[in-house]
Image: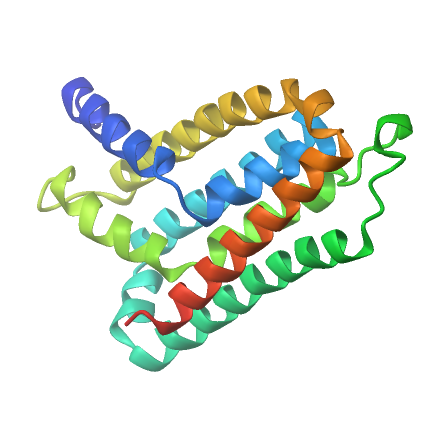
Length: 208
């Protein structure tokens, strides 16, 4: 079993990692803007599931193979970058269409929870830097002869941290959805989000 002090320290580090702006943050924020709190939470749950998968992959040694192989790492990185650029271009196309006049009259969310969940999961799974982060982090909190059970305990903690943080973020952004329903505000936000996602995708693609 992981000690309480070790678990708390691990949770704090994971929380700092989750809070830092990045692809996950942008996907949850945009999902909550377009689909409300439920869509934002669904995106956060997808991201949390991705975190769990990465940590389990580390426990099984799969992630180590990925980070050790320059080709595999690059392929996953480029696919992830392309996906971020795809999401950004979708936001730009929304700005170009300019169909914001009836936003306040729309009842159905523009992003369904299932679609938001898929965006969150894919964004996280296609980011090999998540694997690098946890590969560097886990040894600091595990004994030298750590069991798979202990690694899975940390995986559950990391997943829980992601769920809680993105629940809070989605709730905050979702509560402002009425504000974001303004056509002028949405046009600016779509342009800004699209630029950030495309820029982040390009940055991910060119970084070594």
